[in-house]
Length: 253
Image (spheres, rainbow, N blue to C red):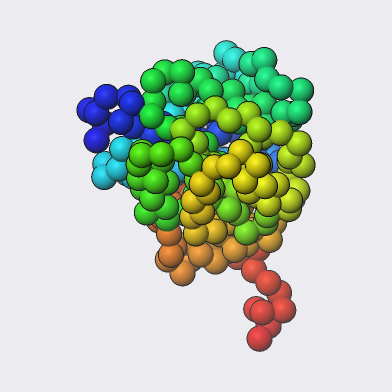
């Protein structure tokens, strides 16, 4: 698959930020310290990009990290799977006024990837280290089939973990209330307004608060139903999170 010409491939970019203390996974502080949250963020990045590389072995995928700010590549590269390519997504691209906030970075990444000749582009979050690999393959397969469409991977909190498209439809990111439970529903509405077919993947969850972190720790302990996320599992063990985050009521029976 990786040897195919770009127009036959779907470029999937992980929305990535260098895992620096005080700037990475800050919503996990507490229960984690800033240093621990950065360590967890680094593990997430490696697992998500490794997972993407695994999907690319059996699907028409080219692997990317979409990063910001410009000049931070050297801080990010050590935490990515080998051969992960880079694309800037700092929101500096000129976009319609109604595309604001995080939507500017998403649209910039999609536009830049499609400008490189790829037949489709998808944007993937870095907060779902156990996302099943099959969902990434399904997204790429749907996006490289004939016809225009949007692929959406809804998150259980009302956002989405993946959005894919075959053209840089700015309207998909217009007037979206980012970081709220309305994001996925508003995105569905934008796709409908554009008259685009919408393909939805199985929902999954983001690890972006203490409750989701506890869920991740339980999932790792039980054996993930999705991707094994070995780097994340190693950090969970190193930080003894199963003990530290245990429910005291449950522990007392």
